[in-house]
Length: 417
Image 1 (cartoon, rainbow, N blue to C red):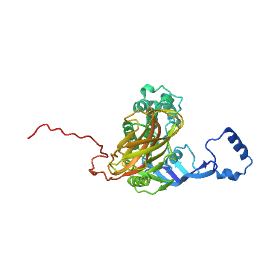
Image 2 (cartoon, rainbow, N blue to C red):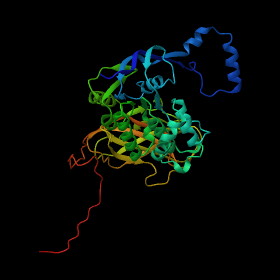
Image 3 (cartoon, one colour):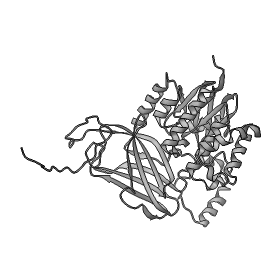
Image 4 (tube, helix red, strand yellow):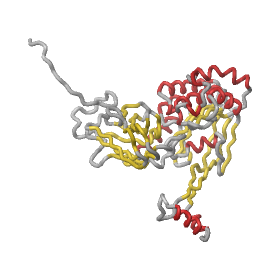
């Protein structure tokens, strides 16, 4: 039997959340700030305690992973997946419990972590190899393979702070996967890449697993988890729940998504990396009088906060099957120019279809905010919505594909009998 390479016992992580006092405003004058600060010197500590709240991101999590396992960490946003991976990667310390890891760990958790922004791609490859404990000779042996996989030859001697998010992730994954760690941890960060790159990464992770190394993988793409992973750890509100298989975990995750409402608070959902720092999705809801029935009018309202003036802003929403296949994408700039200039503040953006083309089924929803094709905010498969058959559905679900679009039909008679 394979050796246990990761042992997690009763792992818990607590954060202290700060809250504003009741009645306080988000924006205060300099005079109010000074007055409140001085006043607090003369108040007891009880009110300071009242403005804080304990939040347990993880609570009594226990599991073990054996060498060569391919483990999917599955759960909704806020379930504790990212916190668990940060503890496994030794980025943060647990509050309680123990964790034992044998071997070198390479982690790809967030865009912007792991590389020094001022160093070039070439220098960061050597730096990451040294952090993993590899000799210079070992890094040189893998160097060309890393560069070829990442497809960044032209930018190898450019500081990575000038890389696009896609280039950054390609190089970061190539380094993490090729420098032969015993344990490879990959979070949802791969969603930044295009479909071809994601497929390439999944293939590489499969090769890594075949070499007897251990993979820990987090993704909302259940099809990718199903393809890659042989085991699953299912998290729900910070705690592990017993599951019998990867398929069992995926089913529980899908059932959790279905409990989502048609008016969704997106502000509280955890983001990876720099997502949400310049523009942030606050809310997604159906407009009054709108519904999700096939063939009926569909109007979606997005509440977006711009933290500064943003040019060429666009918003997009994707509908995927629960198996991870994209069926429909709606983009605000598809048949019109993006919003040339959106000022700092909170805005509502409406997307409307005269007829909802989605066949009756259940779809996972992903939403993104972009500026000049640069991703500003991304929430992947955060909820699931069920589309039903509406009263105007004259055709019914014939089962051909995920959606049916209205078309103009003309008949021309070419000849008579």
